[in-house]
Image (cartoon, rainbow, N blue to C red; front, top):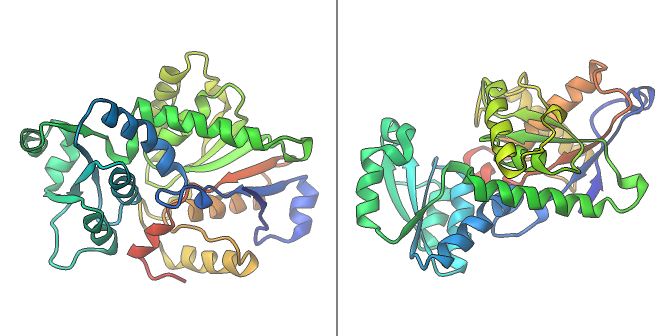
Length: 302
């Protein structure tokens, strides 16, 4: 699952700085919920089944990878997924929401105010009354069980670094809610973490990630986490022409690797810029591909 990755840099640039770059192909894991989606949901789904519940409810946008994975996994274990969808539902559903319904899921549109309030909203209270045997999963699977799943994922990745040539001193990944980063940070043997948030003001995630990590492991080494928030390209789900062209270049150089437009594309772009600026000398870097290729349904694919 670990594959060498060539960036669009002159080879001498990395050689001069003593840098190597590889990629962990999380997008190839679990076809129903690739990348971090499976890891954030597995313990939540197990817990809902243990409680004997019939529904799993969560939040997401009309192109949400999280909702897509939730429907797939819930259906496979005979739970019915319910989605509180940000914004109005249009007569023609997005491909993501069509897939959600085809897996037996139920859609509830949400005004932005209710969506922001989440479980505390009047809408959520109404839905709870309608589905009394339901388990609630926060947006993106960002709760203690989701973080525990990502902690396990860190262990899984570490187990593949079985020889010295495959031991990396820095893992590089994106962040949305910060749950995956928190799980990795909590693991005592994870290396330095270099995080490129996909949303504006991503530096504000730092206290959330640290707090979640400490709940998972009170001895978490918080100083091994660095956030670089300069490469969000306009914010969550923004995919400007500059980034589109960059993804095309990466795919031409690496035809067996696809980057998702929301998360990992921004990671690779940001990482290359940091290398060009000479900020990552003598690093053996491992990019964690967190999946999300389903997210292309909301964009014109290259």
